[in-house]
Each structure stands twice: as C-alpha cells, then as structure tokens.
Image (cartoon, rainbow, N blue to C red; front, side, top):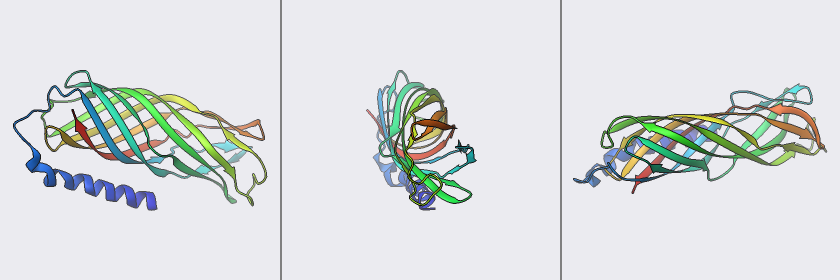
Length: 213
C-alpha cells in the first residue's frame, strides 16, 4: 500500500511540473539535443507467481528509484540504458503466510521510437530491448515453510517492451510516464537444489523528470 501511495504522489508532482516550469521555455528548440537523462520512481508488480517445492507462491510488488540515460540518434530514435537505482524488495507468500523475501535490481538496454517532432508538447514513445535482473538478499522466514533452508534465485534475463509518453515543459525539461513489461524466468534453488522456476514477468510503472542536453 505504501508503494502505491508513493507512486500516486510522484505522479501528482509530475502532472504539476509543467505549470510550474512553463516560464522556463525560451526560443530554443528541443531538436538536435543528443543526450537525455531521466530520474524517477517506479512500481514493479509481478504478473505471474512461481511454484516453490510444489507449492504455489505469491510475490508482492514494490517500488524503487530509477535512472535512465538515452542517446538520441535523431529526434525520433533513441538508445536507452535504464535501471533501478535501488532494489525492489519482494515478499514471497503462500497460503500459510510469508515464507521468504528477495531483492531484485533490473537494468536494461533498449531502442526507442518517439513520435512527432521534438518540440511537440505530448510525445508518445515505444521501445524494445533486453534486460537482466539480479536477485540477492534471499532469506527464508524463521517460522515459515522454508525455515532454516538456504534459498537462491538466479539472475533472470529476457526481453523488455516499453510504452510511455513525454510531456515537454521547456526545450530542456520534460516529464515522463512509462510502463515496461519484463519477460524471463530463472531457477529457484533451496539448499542448492532446484525447487522451482520464477517467471514473474513484472510490469514496471514509472514516472520521472528528464532533461535534454
């Protein structure tokens, strides 16, 4: 619940920024600026739940700060490096309650296409890329079904699809909202033995503020 409140607050700030910074606009143009940097906040919510040792588990979502850096090949095509600046902390539950927790930190490279000219106020974009997500901090609950056992989750690798929109505030500044779908699976091990597969396929909803240079 706290993650949803934080994301809602961040979205409110983003929607308020254009009015606050409208006077920053000059006769300059966003066209031709080659580097974009976006700092933001995102909520990662798994769309699938794993089976561990034959037991179906539910994995909670969480929020974290994110950072993206893009090289704009031209006004419409960009290559973006994106990742979580902090870790998403996920709680793992079964019908008997919380059994474990694990941290995830994804990072990705993707190609993007931004529609319209660079100075258009609202600019949708789409992208496709490749991501990896490192898992660490795996810990079994001391009173759960996995108590006393060592849990390991391998790094997940796969494809990422992105859809989003930029709202130009000035030739330099813009607000962003985006959604990313990460697809991939990794082995889950208990005491070094494979006990299941984690195919979480999370949707990552993010908002942020960016600058072009």
